[in-house]
Length: 116
Image 1 (cartoon, one colour):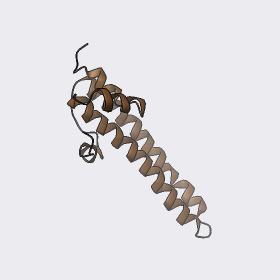
Image 2 (tube, helix red, strand yellow):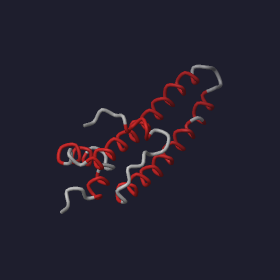
Image 3 (cartoon, rainbow, N blue to C red):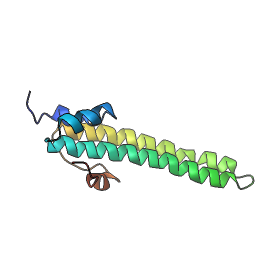
């Protein structure tokens, strides 16, 4: 098997198991490391969206009669997760095509993650 296989870069999009595989066994593969950064950036973006909503919803929920509005804001989280699913597919397709294109919105930030 070729050491620069695009499948190894696509494995980086499998959380935890794929991350460990790429980080431990594919450290010398720049494409796999790039896609590892993108995958971790995607997960951090989704976690940040959920945590941000939780904080805002809690604060808005403290205001009388605004709890329903804080629940309605959950649609932003749902939209972010649909966007996350779309970018996950984009990332896997880019990995399989051997392209190092950053994912939209957070991809440039994720490229600077200190993973070597």
